[in-house]
Image (cartoon, rainbow, N blue to C red; front, side):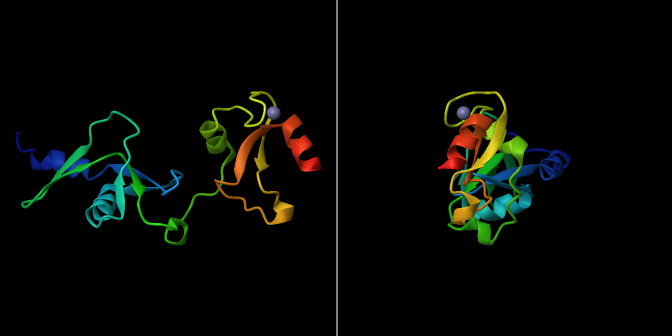
Amino acid sequence: MEAQPPSQQSQILQNSVVVFSKNYLPLARINIKRAVVLLVTGQAESLDLSSAKPWEIRSPSLVLQVPSHIRLTVGNPERHWKVPLVNRREVLRRDNHTCQYCGSSKHLTLLHVIPRSKDGQHTWDNVVTACEKCNSTKSDV
Ligand SMILES: [Zn+2]
């Protein structure tokens, strides 16, 4: 393998890595140096979502492959990470723009799986895509 010139190395360090929770929910975008620390300390593992080539980081003593997506292996990351607010666009994208109850792709809304009236949280794992019809049926129950 050829050594990378220093300029290329510092360019790699400009990149950012997407961090997912243990439950595969997107948490944050962090800089690559922070990702390296998580990987080296065993707090995260590579999450290969794409076939993208990992970035290669070299130090005098080791060569590290840093993927563009990592997943935390430690529990309860929400305590340590600022979780982005639930965002309609991201939820729709995660659910492939289809109602999770009937598969419709029209009149989509967000639905709390555990209703807010029953202490359901507005969190990524309690919010799903549902069409207006299913949403109103479900909230009647
Ligand atoms: Zn529906």
